[in-house]
Amino acid sequence: MPARPLRLGVNIDHVATIRNARGGRHPDPVRAALAAVAAGADGITAHLREDRRHISDDDIARLAREVDRPLNLEMAATEEMLAIALRHRPHAACLVPEKREERTTEGGLDVKGMAPALAPFVARLGAAGIRVSLFVEPDPAQLEAAKRLGAPVVELHVGAYCEAEGAARTAQLGRIVAAARAAETLGLECHAGHGLGFDSVGAVAAIPQVVELNIGHFLIGEAIFGGLDSSIKRMRALMDRARAAGTGQASA
Image (cartoon, rainbow, N blue to C red):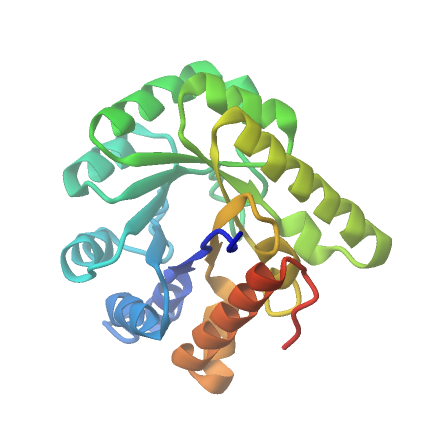
């Protein structure tokens, strides 16, 4: 049986971070998104944060208008962000936790504990034809809560795996594998993201139940040394090799 296709979503947030460090229009996140698509990205991810620290409202409008690949809007569950999503109608909206003091998204949503608050956002986005994803830890209780809410997709937070070493990394990978299997059993589409790099992507890409990886910061960082086209193509090759082989032993 052929391997299930694995999509790559490229997060272009930190192109905007570099632009905003100095102001002006350069480098342009939309140009980066178009370059990512040309290099093999299946979709573009962007997180419009409450404090607008990187992606701006205009960036989202332009991405929705100018890029002919699915746009995945990462967003907090707030009325402001819901209104923006309903205005631009991205292909997908991934609900993520958000705190002003954090450098980047830290951990997954507590879907189980926040279910009453999250339910109207899941319902209104879904009713608008926007595919709803919940960014969660690889925890069966969170997956079951996502299923009860009616979200069709979960994205597993794999940051702990990416940061771990040795036996700890093996244990974290085991959690991800078990969660991906549980998601499929529940009828949830399973994605994964946060912190993936060349040395960590293979094992996650090899998990057959995972159908999409969202990767951003690492690719933008590598682009400084070898170009965005090169970094995406190398990541794409590692993903595809691992998926085809059914093993995480793909190497750079």
